[in-house]
Length: 190
Image (cartoon, rainbow, N blue to C red):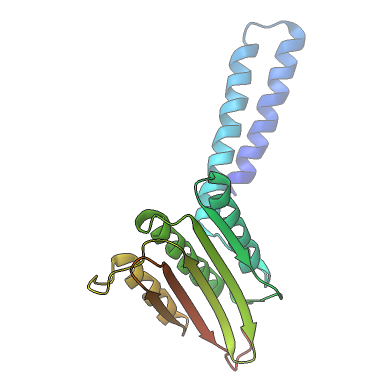
């Protein structure tokens, strides 16, 4: 609703700016600044919305959101980040898809913050027993004595909410692998 309102106001402001320009009005620059400000506000609104609802409400939404996530990390240029999904994995329940996305996002964030990784690889696959989401990096790994951090605890909580399981495996110096497995449900949500 807010986005639609801003779009309408932006069109009105651009029309006003054009009309003022045609008459040679000194207020033209103010109208242009207003129109530009509305466009910036609309862009920020879209960014916030994308953060709140990262997965489109469609069965293909998770695959698209994970592709966007890895592309955005890869575009930063510091870390090679790839996503592999050899066959379509359809997740009809948007809540489940959003939890899976957030687990992937947290895994990547942890790799970027803590592991000094230069490569992060994510896979999503499904077979007759269920779905598997895996994020691996080539970073420093986690020492065995390290207690699970808040991010890992949140990932495990999200997995529990959707009936999945998260494992974190690591060897000091050889990277970390976070795997979320979601068993096939009888209600055909996946």
